[in-house]
Image 1 (cartoon, rainbow, N blue to C red):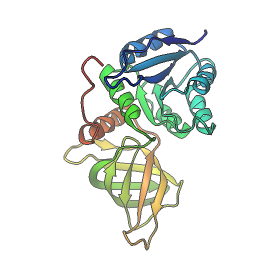
Image 2 (cartoon, one colour):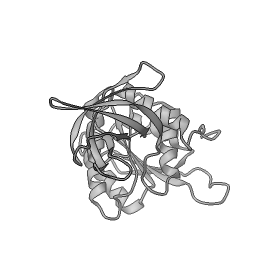
Image 3 (cartoon, one colour):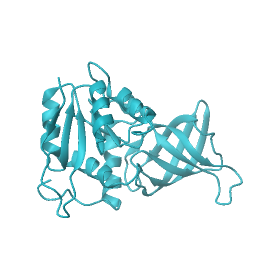
Length: 252
């Protein structure tokens, strides 16, 4: 199916053109749903598989790619990897849509380099929040908010107790007497402050402050396997407490 372009919404009040959003899904109904949800946010481009989407991304340079994870031709995680390997596209935000409550699908998207993960059935308000956040950013990043709670890290028969200082949609920073090596992977377990909500993702060390550091040892952790309910809770927690915690614009 040839790609098609949905007419852009009116220019912004400043006269600047709307952002370009590339929607990728092999199911026409989901392309239509996402187009309706995001049509007033920017100029919509659509593609029915990852290969077609990559060609459009090279030609059109969209400001954001929203892609389904599992498709008949090239899957969304492979599209994300190709974008990350391309010197001209690698900083392009990519949000991956998964099909349900599968921690493994979340992990596939994260390992491929996705900036965000959302799940079906799609919620218009949540999707707008995620998309608008990335369109506002000048660089790919995760917003962090304060989050202080005890965390257990388990690797094999080894348990390390740490104290988290902040959390983002994609991970957290913890202080610990022992710092794992970069790229180490382990099971996390922590309870959300002032609640009984238990979160148990797997994670890996993205960076660390080693023992002897003047500010004490610590680690920046990236979540890998993360259940849908926990991911949605973190998304809302960070959104409500971060600088982006504003509702979508009227009519968006």
